[in-house]
Length: 507
Image (tube, rainbow, N blue to C red):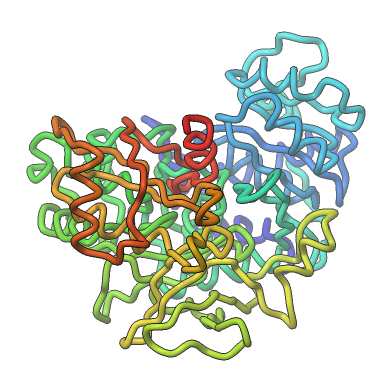
């Protein structure tokens, strides 16, 4: 099985009557998803799209998203998922960089898409989910309704690119990670094997399906097992909890901020989410107090995982049968190897910090049109993640920071997450992020950006005095800035570059 489309085909053969998608009041069986995808594949083919072409996909969490994915895969097209929150300039960059032949988009994104495609000669196919407004548009539903099912499946190689997933852009503009059919399929199998998924399982899909976690862990893994994917277009804590109570899925996949918000729901303890075997968290580290409070309130364990776009994305998870520690990246998934190494390439010892490197069939082919950037991260079959982790005595690693985010103050290396861990221990602090700002005297100076808990007040002097009692003086923030919220990416990870630039601008 080379083409990822065969996931849908095989599951439909085994469980044609199983519910594949739940969306509002609609329950859609696998056989109906497959028929819609096959009809769409014929419609897309009639537009002249062929294997190797690239098409962007910009839809919210609606049934048309997975249908479009499998329709495009069936004809061998490479897919570029795009966030529905992107502005025109961000859309334009991805469409231009990937040299797409067309884009499928929701009508709510129309004005931004039409602005983004200006000057892009290759992007000829504008396929809209909704009503046409300009002559160039073709309705997505028309392509599905007016065609017969396409019978054949494009013959692709396992190392052909299935998706181009753009990274968050730690430095410079986002880069497109080329993920092959084998990369994604391998990660789906690893996740399914770890979770022991079967046709009776179901998952709440509130994370956007356009991000790697949504695409692979949520949609791919559960479709591969014949389970249900319950689609929600936005996160509202109470709505999600009540949906779990009503639909009784077995898994929830979220980000740390979501678990905090669940605890703020009025009378949350009265909502029954006992159908869940586990909650899975990815995107950033969970605070220990959040895990303890959530598990005490809802009686459902949380398993933290670690992944990155270049690894399709999941690398490791905490095991439900071993001791768990907040912030741990856990152990590698089946079929994935993971090491923490020092600058000489040797394995680090407990207490030491090193870079996480990963090997497996889930590791990307490379960055699109960026051979030098690819060489920097792919070496001798290993993916150098740029994430630094500290190895603990129990063999687990704990993320410290990305390599490029280490603060060097007066020759000392300061790891932001270490400082952040002490900051969030303050009873008034809800969230904190620490960044390094250029400083003529010390090279870099430490600044902290803090979100206080509801109805709390604090001063910079109070916070600095608190932290000075707990860590070495050279690690203490010089400046503390209070904000209402921290900027975050689609996976919930704090956008440190944005925080850093804001602090530089406000110096």
